[in-house]
Picture 1: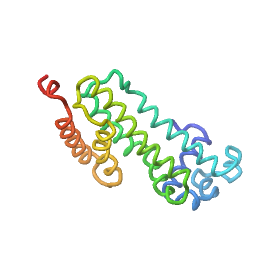
Picture 2: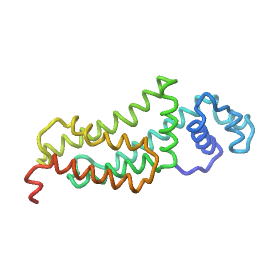
Picture 3: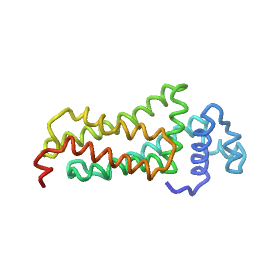
Picture 4: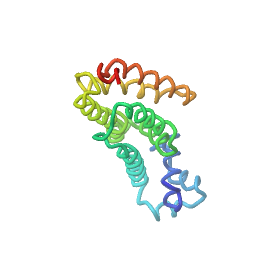
Length: 196
């Protein structure tokens, strides 16, 4: 999302402040100060701080969903799995909206049940469901050994989820994850695919 309007600036700066200081600790005055305007400008665009948070949730959820929908699971083959996994990891660790959104949800998940549910849905349940659906198709197509697609999804996604919590050289982490995907592939790909 390109930041063009004052409303866009309010949303983006709020996201950065919420992810740094937490939702409750961030005042509308601090938001106004961060974009060099008065509190009145904030209230011209939003009725409350909660409304700003709701806008952030919608934008970031839509942003992640749009990235996921770029791939048609029904049309994919095994070679797409690595690129999908590493691509989504890169988005979740480098995107200027998604990185602070994830931090915001991490901070607030222990204080706010609604945000905890969003965190669980966006960063745990959706990726696992997506992978499970992907593996169901790859098993049916004969690319993967028969097995429980949910277990396969958990096996592949767990290191990606863990590495979200580690600060470090993203390129080095991606290479480690690439090795994990290769090892996973060797363990689950069918003998027919190995021969190709």
